[in-house]
Length: 324
Length: 315
Image (cartoon, rainbow over all chains, first blue to last red; front, side, top):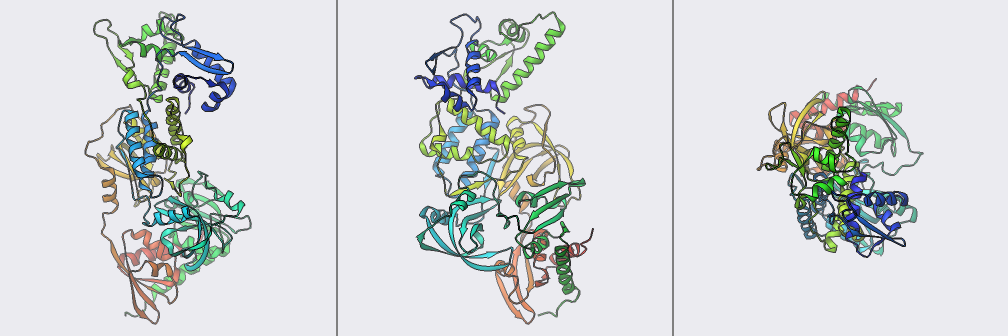
């Protein structure tokens, strides 16, 4: 919520902190508003001041060519201290960083937290963060990325239940939902993939530079702040098969973790979702792993595969093998 | 704006009627009932907005001059204290400000950065690209809970516990949040149960609504949300599972095993430890007929229940 009052309260000290003046266009950009708006703000400030409201009591702002400076601030020399929710949003984010290996220097995070606590006039001790990722070798992969080299990895794919060897060009490590993922261009698959670090069984650095095809670099979005795609269906093409599931409330996590084409809420917290999957073999394992919290609505083929796989497994319990 | 300057300029409490007389924008005839009510509504709205921005309004009665309560802003509480960041600190603050995906938290960090910039500190010019990116989870419940903790207001939400059939309405005075193993939790005093409870944010099924006044409760000094959460979640000691996997199949189960063998003609026996039985059962079910759970009986039962639910696949 960015109110005009919040902006006005920042505007005067902003100019006080820059006694040489600020070009008006730059001022508008700094505050993310139009030139017209910033002019209106400055005109309004001109009419604000101390009780009495005589010539010597009002805020005095001077325009010199296109440069704005403040001559009299009526006591508004400093911005308002950080509100509780502002300080908390920032300090919780810093605590997340402090607990994630490879994100900036920890001593700097700790001292920045102390300084912010002083700036907010309070210490936020109500939020703590621990074990952001279970993998202990994040630093190793961070170093691999810094080295700019390609690597050969042996990777266990849970979606296929197989282990394979691939050559990859690392992009970054993403820490999300308790795990660390290596985001990389997979030369074998010819697309950007995410590899969960605890499923990388071996990793050897290759003595050649990591290269990312241009369009892949754009999609990998090194600077993007979008949500992670931890699922194996992260990179989708329109020709991939569509499946339709009905999820019980307990399977809500699926909607958060996998990109869905469509999500329709139903009564009692049930959801109908449509998603694209690499292939139906993957989809079968995925639905089986949801332990009955998902029903397959389409395609019929997948519904039958899930059902017969479950029936085949149940048959083994009905007819248990002899003991060891 | 004039209200802020007026309250900031005096050490004495300013009463509402005096503010109405002196501050432009509030002038009205106090004897005109409708005009006076309009003033009071506007004044209340403005006070709420000031608090939201972080302006600390004090209220009290000036014993020598007035009988009616008044307001003031103490300069020392109002102003952002002097602050300076090293380049490394500025870089991590800039990274922290970009972490959130929740709009309310994004706007909170953006407002904080704007205040810092107004004080002459531009952390964004020190922004750096780190090889590791943290995604702290996009739970919509986090923002209102943090706001509730910052203002000590109670919250209400619907919650689907691990063993609940349907979501239940809960009212809570939150003490703190914790992220543990990539999951967010909130702990506090449950107003309906009359006891300390913790909740996993992904299991909150409704919006989190703040209700009641600010500063409605105090957070106990010795509360350690993280310890409480990890104890609650880790309460069961790990169990040992023994399963039979078909030859050259179910590699995921083999990878997890700390003991493989003996080998039998119909497969290999593997053993591993687990704590979360429902989760482990659905994971084992995903291997279909390649895996047969032998022990313990609870896990066999859970796995069969998963498979039965999957086998009854019809609408």
